Image 1 (tube, rainbow, N blue to C red):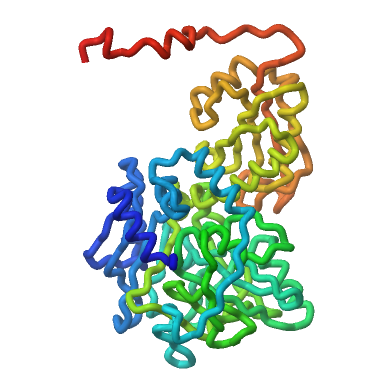
Image 2 (image 1 turned 90 degrees about the vertical axis):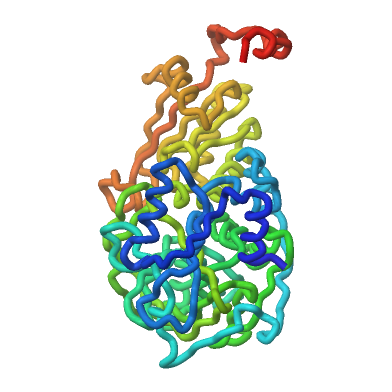
Amino acid sequence: MKDLRQWIQALEHNAPKELIRVKKIVDPNKFEATAVMEKLESKGRFPAVLFEAPKALKGEDHRFKLLMNTFGTFSKMAVALDLPPETPKKQLMEEILKRQDLEKEPAIVAPQNSPVKENTLVGDDLDLNMIPIVRHVEMDGDRYFSPIAVSKNLTTARYNISWNRMMYLDPQHLAIYMSPRHLWTYFAEAEQTHRNLPIAVVLGHHPAFHMTGALLTPLDRDEYKAAGGFLGENIRITPSLSYGDDLYIPADAEIVIEGEIVAGQRTVEGPFGEYTGYTGPQRVSWLFEAKAINFRSDGIIIDIFPCKTEHMNAHLPIEASILRTMREATPNVIDTSWVDSGGPLTIIIRMKKKVEGEPMQAAMAAFTASNFIKIAIVVDEDIDPTNLKQVMWAVSTRVQPETDIQNLKGLQGHVLDPSLRHEIKGSGMIIDATRPLDRPFPRRGLVPEEILRKVSLRDYLDE
């Protein structure tokens, strides 16, 4: 049975330097938790940090823990997918692609056998202030959760799992921001018939479950089944306290808030620190009303460190989905660098070009797959896409701006792109930094490979 605690144990056993426990009291409402994370990142350190004594605004009857930087390194994500922590990113991406194709039926368990049902609160006992909620960066509209929202289509009964930020409003209400994807579609359909949409707000589970929320899963696939495939075992689910069999919640989660996105009502949400590294604007968003809280004793909250490396790394399953789409269009695509490129809206594509036109085809597939992409740079197989020095060398020596840079107008941009001049409509750019095949082109100046294999520095240097 996989849960967050099992992953923490696996991490401490396989990569002990990837986890730090902080026993000192920290006040996440006063930026103290994110200040610790900022100090670590400024030193080039990205361990998961488990705050064992975070303060809540109301009462200390229940002791919760706060986990940050769960996705701060690919090593921690590798452990979540049962791989060695030293697994290269390329291999990690291939594992994600493999697990995307797997499905496992969820296993329904009784409430009395569900760890998340260890404690339940409803009615006047329900106060979100009992949970340590994090204030992240200085312009945040209020304290924020960065949870997984589990929803069920009221017509098809398909379950959706998505990452959705939620801002504290009052003891029973949160503001939820929804991108125009599956959860947004479910709520729009419910609202058309004047119905609220029940959801489960999962504050902590195994990281592989959270990563499922970033997969670009087709609408015809149930995401509880997809989560089982991603976890490598059937995900255990149990009837919710508020909706019974009409909404199942993860049985092995740490904390789950049950409630509804309210039809016909909106609220103000934001600002919020975004994955782009900027503070996003305040906007009109949707209202969530809490009905019940289920939680394990000493329940652990997974919180994403926004604007920073973890926030970008959490998009890795999206990058894998984009890679898949490109390979379907152009099988010669080898790999990509997006979340680790330093450019939150820029993807670098490595391919073994066979004919002219393939770089454009691959780049257009990336734009089709996700509006996260604004700039695509295509390089040859001799360029490491994660090495920006090599990428810029290819751009400098293999690109003629007049012919190899294409500007695309009228694309759907990303609402979080601060450079947009329209609310959503934007533009794109493709840089073909591959060698031409239709004319002679200089070879790179390299030492013969067979000599490099034979020569060892130890034979020539006194080191």
